[in-house]
Length: 297
Image (cartoon, rainbow, N blue to C red; front, side, top):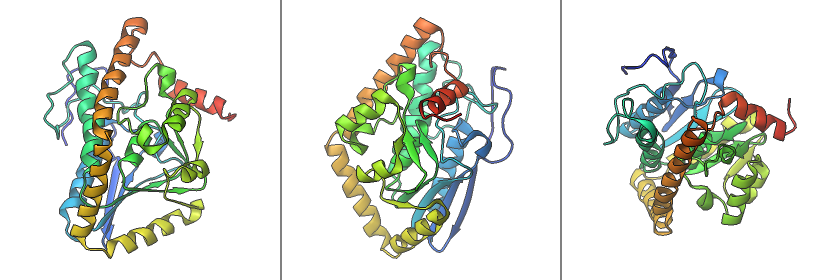
């Protein structure tokens, strides 16, 4: 994949692949691998994920896709501050939006996130094969988007979920599924408070399917994936389409469209009032605030 940066602000990119792929016994394992940065998602990772999902879809031997991650945490969200941040870099686009890198002001983020965040997540939600998110540790902000597009979420007993971006003045992440994954009143609490939702509570609320001790998580996921892989391919695809269709009849897609524009109004407001689309809060500042709120050092 070619990387072209027309501006010098982001000259540092990682040479190792941020996504690993393997397939065996009817299951494809797609693994995010930026553990030094808690698997935060830059564009390089996003496009690599898309390539891996395409590979799994094209392989007739693959019946089930598992999305997992190396390291302590599943994903700490979008990349807003690592050396590999590449938000002003051109990639070979997968959707029919024009390039964002030379666009002014709010247009840059609006166009980029139509492709890299909202568009990609919708694309992955429609993968015609069952997908399982295997979540350990933190699943924060943009990490929620990756878990929520999967058909099942299977988590370790130390997992937690969080969307703290209201702290930036932003009403949740771009793929706004909060009020579908959670009861609306719980979704409001989740966003207003910005606190961690422990996995036990997420399981009670129906957002998580199964919980395993951390050292048993992979074996548990393997068992679930193997059982699903015994089902007929077309039956699985049609069942997935059916349930997704019901969600869309309930307004999931149209609600997400509306909130996407609210999200970008918030970015523009931040630009106008602080000179920065995320109100000057980088990854370190957000992580420090989250740890302080959780009583960690």
